[in-house]
Image (cartoon, rainbow, N blue to C red; front, side):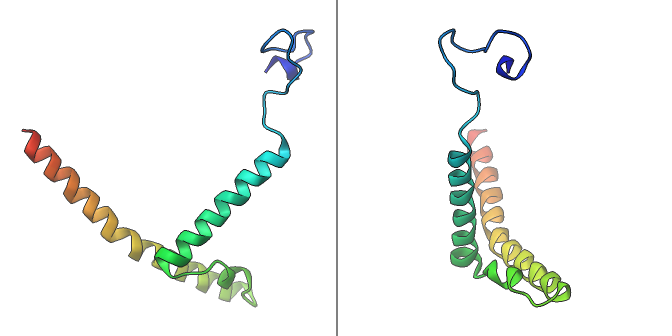
Length: 96
């Protein structure tokens, strides 16, 4: 953090001129990959496409599609969460 301060020290290694953050291009690539991963999950697992929200003709339709997406995610996640709860309870019971 000293690199952003007004002291003469740059922080980190004495001979390093690198900023303590990733380059903007790398951060953009990571964000792009995260968005693609979420989009694939929504399409493959939840049968929902973000383009429905993005391409909606007005705010009311956007809200409608956001609700549809929310319901699709919840419907997909409930069985998984239930399975995880059952699995956790089973593992607790066999430990004791």
